[in-house]
Length: 429
Ligand code: GDP
Ligand code: IMO
Ligand code: MG
Image 1 (cartoon, rainbow, N blue to C red):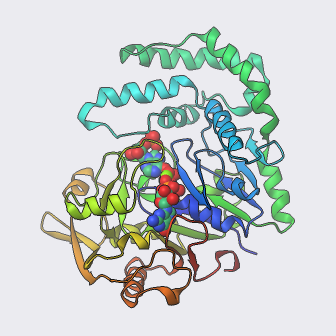
Image 2: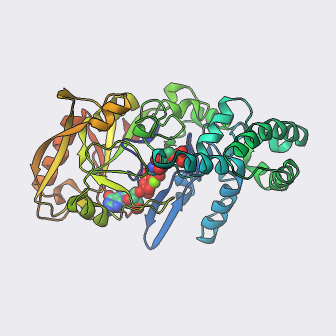
Image 3: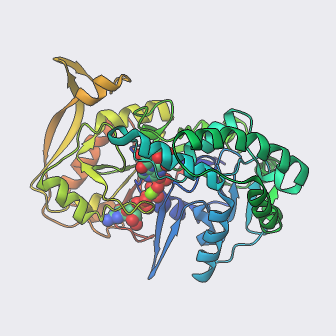
C-alpha cells in the first residue's frame, strides 16, 4: 500500500490544501514536513472555509495530524490557529495532533530579524512573509535553535536563550531594530510550555508504528519546488527544501516510505513575492487571471502575480521534485479564453534553453518561448468527470502532460472539496 507526498510544482498556492483535504479521506494520518506558518492553505467544505498555516490539512477530516521535525514552529501561532479552527467547530487535541520533539521553534526575535533585514534590502527585498522562517532555519543549522523538547527543561532554555540573544541582539542592533530581553522571553516560553508540551513526542516512533500497521500516510508539503532553497529561483526562495525527498528527513522516516509523489500545479501560474517569473503577464490577461482566480495571498493578503502555464518550469519541478503525477488545479479559471499559451522554454541572450538556468542574471533575462492553443467556450467549473470537460480543455491538459513529462492524476475544477476529477488513485499506485 503506497503512501503519498503532495508538493507544490510552481511558486506555491497551487491548491495543495484542497488536494490534501480531498486525499485525506483515503489516508490515516497527514504529516507536515517542512516550512512553517508562511504557508496558507485554504479548504472549502460546503459553506465553511478553513485557512490553515501550520495545522496539517487532514484535521478537517478528523485525521491524525503530525507536525514533523522539518517544520519550524511558532508556538504562539500554533495555539492561535488551534483556537481559530476550534471556533469553527474542529477538534484539535493531543489525541489528534502530535508535534515532533525535535522541531525548532520560531520566536518573536526571528520575525523581527526577518522584517528588519527585508527593510534593509530595500528594492532588493525577497518579499518574505515576515514570519521569521529564514532566521529560524538559520538557527537550526547553526545549532543554536530552541526546540519543542527544550520547553520541558528550564535550565536548557535559559542557557540557549543566552546564546541566541547574543547573536540576535547583535544583529538587531546593527540593523537599528529593537532588541529582546532574556527574562521576558524566558517567562513567555515557560508560560507557554504547559500548553505545547502535551502535543510533543518523538513522532518518528509513532510513524514507524503506523507504517508497520499498514496505515496510509499522506505527507503535506508547503511552498513549492521553485521556492526550494536549492532548486528554486535562489535567492528568491524560502529557507527549506520543498522537494519530496524532504518528506523523509522532515518527518523521520526512510526515503522508501514516501511513496507516490503528487505535484500540484495551477493550470496557469502565480507567484507572491519578488523574483523571476518568465511567463508573467503585466497586462489585461494577467489581470483577468488574477480576478477570476481570486489571486490574493492567504497569509500576506498581497495580490499574486499571474502568468501563463510555464511547462518548462513545471517539467524541471517534475524532475528535481521526483513528481510521479500532477494534480492540475484551477482549470475553471481558464474558461472563456479565446486562446491559451504554454511556455515551452526560454530564449536567453539569443540561446534557447529548455530549462531555467540557475544564474540570477540568466533567470531575469529569460524570455519565454510559447506555443498557442485554442481555448474553449464551455464551462469546466465544478466538473466531476472527464466527460463533462469541453474537448479543447482535454487537449490543453493532454498537451501539458506531454510537455512536463508527467501524467495528470487529478484535476480540480473549483475550490469546493468534491469538484475534483480523479484519473488515478495515487494511493493505489
Ligand atoms: P496552497 O497554498 O497550495 O494550499 O493554495 P492556497 O490555498 O494558498 O491557494 C489556492 C486557492 O485556490 C485557494 O483559495 C483555493 O480555495 C482555491 N482553489 C483550489 N483549487 C481550485 C480550483 O480548482 N478552482 C478554483 N477556482 N479555485 C481553486
Ligand atoms: P503555500 O504553502 C506562496 C514566498 C514568499 C517569499 C518567499 C520567501 O501557501 O504555497 P519566507 O517567508 O518563506 O521566507 O518567504 O517565499 N512564500 C510563499 N509563496 N505560497 C507559500 O506557501 C509561500 N511561503 C513562502 O512570498 O517570496
Ligand atoms: Mg497558500
